Amino acid sequence: MKNIKLTFCVAVFAALALLSSVRAEAIPDECKIGGFAVSVQAWSFNRFTVFEAIEKTAKTGAKCIEVFPGQKLSKEEPTIKFDHNVSDEVIAKVKSKLAEHKIKAVNYGVVGVPADETGARKVFEFARKMGLYGITTESTGSIDVLEKLAKEYDIRVCFHDHPKREKDPSYKIWNPHFVMEVCKDRDPRVGACADTGHWQTSALKPVDCLKVLTGRVHSSHLKDRADFGKGGPDIVYGTGLGQVAEVLAELKSQNFSGNISVEYENKWDDNVPDITKCVEFVKAWGESQKK
Image (cartoon, rainbow, N blue to C red; front, side, top):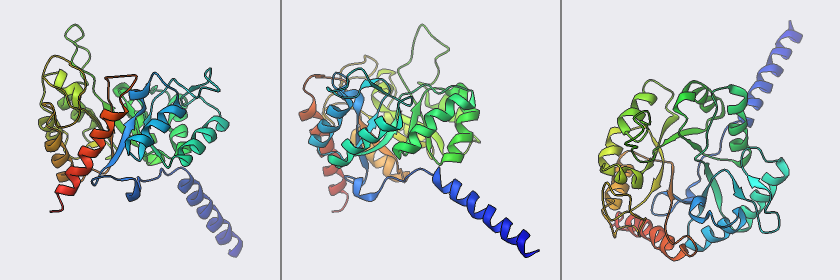
């Protein structure tokens, strides 16, 4: 009987060890600015390499980065494309570069996730190895496997919105009500990546969309643009109609704990100064809440 109990205990501890090994890392408080984990979406630097994106992110004052699939690794190894198919050696190189510049990778996307578990697991394994908080995707058709792996790995699934497509009514993820319907009754780790600029292009007010998604907003591609319904270029936070201060207030009211990515689709060759101003806007907003 003692041997049976001992064997059982060993099995339990082994199972717990395995479970802990796949748990994702929370975003630490030291990575936060103005009360938020402010990251830069590496897509802002898509004309440069991953290594250069990390360097540029550090220059903006942000402490986190959201990586995307397909970016060239470095000037020295431009033929290597960084995504969930890379080797552990490549992951180690990127993590070393992140550590060098004191930047934390927090999210990955926008990435397609297949409905088959073997393919989807590759994405989650990559996220685990990178120590990510979330995965950004538009693969709502893979919801069953996404939910299963979100629970297993304790990694957030963040459904991202692009603008409404007038000629493609089957594209529904632009609508926050659709995203909420997809997430309804699912594990709380399944939610939304709120791309506020694309909501503007769809003629939706970002704060209204966030309220629809209350409790399900896990990350954001925060943008500011000068108009609604036209898809203009990104501009510095607080200079457009994107309700940035109001968005921050709404996220705070929802106890948002994910990453806010500055995704700046403008001035591609030299946007560090503008992104820096966006980071400083969030910092100043956070400071204003303490007064």
